[in-house]
Amino acid sequence: MNIIIITGGSKGLGKALVEKYMKQGYEVYSLARTPQKETNPFFSIEIDLSNLTKTIPVFRNLLEKCIEKNPNSITLINNAGTLGKIDTLGKIPLENIESSVTLNYTSPLILCSLFVSILSGFKGTKKIRNISSGAANGSYHGWSVYCSTKSALDSFSKTLAVEERSSASPVHVLSIYPGIIDTGMQEQIRTSTESEFSEVQRFKDLKKNDELSSPQEIAESIYLIDTNNQIESGEIVDVRNF
Image: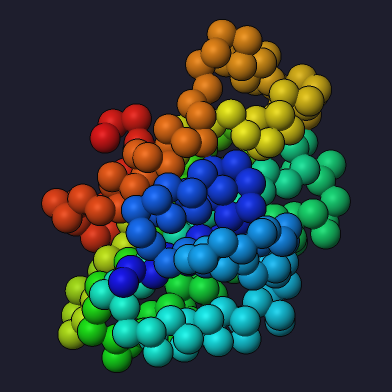
């Protein structure tokens, strides 16, 4: 048996990943704010991942239950994320900055820490897949929080991979760029004004010209990346180059 935990599994790419891994026979756990109908082997855990006080004990208990099942592998996909308020930094409410940084970076960091420590004695395959963005390497007007948190996530992924090399039972870590997907996040981008996001017209054109990937297409690519044993831990992988 193989177990996978997917954050933000209730919609968009996360939902497509849940469906893909279920079809592959995985026992799937989704951690998301929106509750989902459970269908064995799929289990929905309703949780606001930006609330770390509640998230930490829930995730710790989940990992301990996963170990008890004695699976062949346990994988964590940190998929949940947010653009937050799109605007120049000084116009973004401070509470929005805080919640976006927590969801995009602090929460994945905490979940990975728990994953590494609690599964230290687990001898099966252990994998972490952090869903990042090409924005990690960009400087998009109005996206200061999103770009910086995704860049931090990439740096963390590479560093964790280096740390795990000395482990007797290392966790394999990848950071993955999923490309531009037709999800609610893209809808949010297209509702921006030019003063909030100067490149908004380009994203409107991508939708108009049918240049967005479907969540199902990207979930398929991520599955292939995840299960490719030739990719070295610590790599940053762009689905468009895979």
